[in-house]
Amino acid sequence: MSLRTRKPVTAREVRLIGIRQRSPGRWTLTFGVDRTEHAVHVVYHDPPDLPPRAWQTCVEELALACLVDLSTATMASTTVFPDPGAAGREYFLAACHSLRLEALYDTGRPLTYLPLELRTTPGLPRTETLTPGRPDRLLLLMGGGKDSLYCYRLLRRAGYEVQCFYLTEARRTWQQLRRVYEHLAQETRQHRAFLDVNRRGALEQSFGQWYLSQFQIGQVVAAALPYALAHRCRHLVLGIERSSDEAMTTYCGEPVNHQHQKSTDFIRALNLHLKRRFGAGLSLVSPVKGLYDLGIYARFLETAQDLVPLQSSCGGANFHRPHCGRCPKCAFLAALLAGLTGDRDLYKRLFPRDPLQDPRLFADWLGPGSDRPLTCAGLKEEVQLGLRLARSRGLQIKWLGRMAGTREESWPDKTHLRHLLAVHSNTMAPSQLIHRIAPLLDYDETALLQLLTA
Image 1: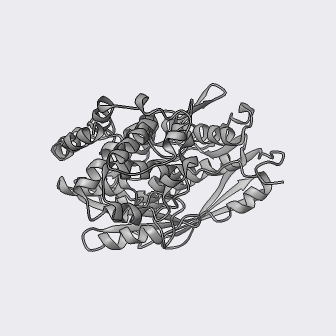
Image 2: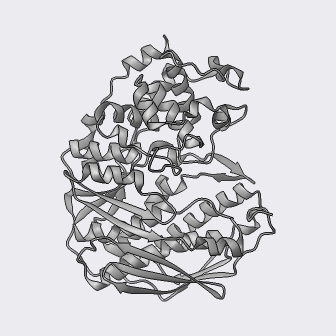
Image 3: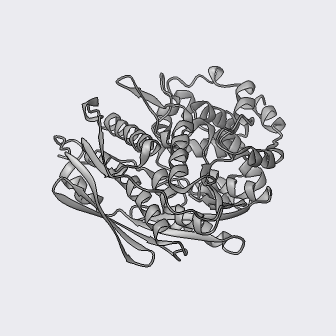
């Protein structure tokens, strides 16, 4: 019997036991899961110079983010943590709710496991007042995918000083991301932290595999805070696209969105929490929130040709290939890339294993009654347009006509293409930033419109 099919076991309580600094830049976070202890280790490479209270506040934020994962992995009914304030409670409980709902949807278990009580001990204080960040200096949370790479080039073209932050983990590969790090080493300042979550296996043996996702946004934001504060970066930048606000499916009447932690409402709650802990001026922004994935990718291919071969958006990447070619996210990206460019060499370089040769990967995108799979990707209309454009470029996709529900005459047309390529309102960036990047977002859609009707 697999861990995911056996009778479910849940924890009663998960709590933060303590935070200990082992040496400069090295910390251990200890949590109690019922009567057992669980440790998370973090290493800040080249740790910046910050006052002790500021360091403690940053590591407390990382502990709060790790607690989201622990309470989801064990389906604990109660969590105990120093009171993070009203905005912090909203941010924490919203993250737990969305990720637990994903886990229940994925395992087919009832919503009786969904409620979570947050019990608080005496509250977390604000850190001491630090020097405000410089308006033209930003810290980009670099994931190595098209969104973060495009944000880097867009903001640099707009005249910003863009520093980069990388979070590496024991369960994720560094090989592909290292290529980005080395490519940018000569032109910008970069920072790294390592988060050791390797002991999750012990939790899975005790509680089963409830949870295959991760609270990545909370962890990377918290881990980046010491560098943002020490280097006086006004904003943390994340490549959050427009479709992240839209639910992917429903489960027992509840909307399920794998990208909920990138949604406008969630980021608003997170920013309110950061304002309380660190003061005004430090917030998370996205310069591409007004663009859909299709619009981001089209502009990325046109304006950042040197960065395009570096992209790796798939968790199955390794030293030899930037994408696994076996997951729905690869299918989404492959459809967009094949439709937006006729560069077959680039396509083969990014997808040594071709997702377009496996119709099973597109079942959730194109099958009857489908919407889209539970993954960090965009809309099915974008997949359909990508495939239409790819066929217009002469690409043979033999299985396409045989898949049920793939009547191309009902697929999106030029109106949809214009909409998905256009720049829409962006509520996740300050007006000054939006005004500076606006002229750089112009895109001539003529060639793609002509190709769509060819």
